[in-house]
Image (tube, rainbow, N blue to C red; front, top):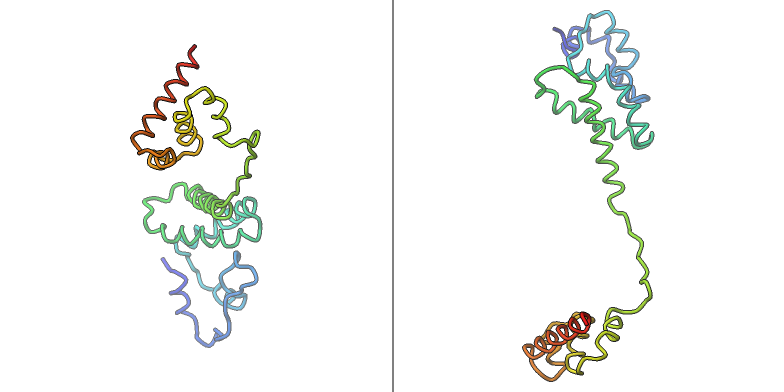
Length: 194
């Protein structure tokens, strides 16, 4: 089995011009410039397995990527697809379903690209239903409570203060504030049941 590198060594060095480089006008078709291609056509070259795989599937994979990502982003995704395939190619156990394998890699790259470009989606800020703060909802419920319990319930559940702060506001301690809030909630439950 001959590979491309060995065939190059069989050519006369004078046939190759030092400035004869790969043709970049179409990165997805053809590896060699027209001058080199003509020189190598006389040699029987059997492509290595990965190059044959690339030749067979590049057009379909590129078309798939263009449809999914658009032409501008498809070029980078195409290169990434075949770079990942090249890295994983030696680990393949068999050559079954290579086309599906290439499309699986390309599909995952499409998903990665969408995640990368759509990673930050800003959610719109929801307006308040009636614009009333939470403590205002509690005020009408706690009207009938004794003043200490009413203040403890509103400060705890309306303003989300801890019991130490509530105790300081009421001129007592955290334990007394906890007890006042608890007693106020019990009274509200009893009132609601009756």
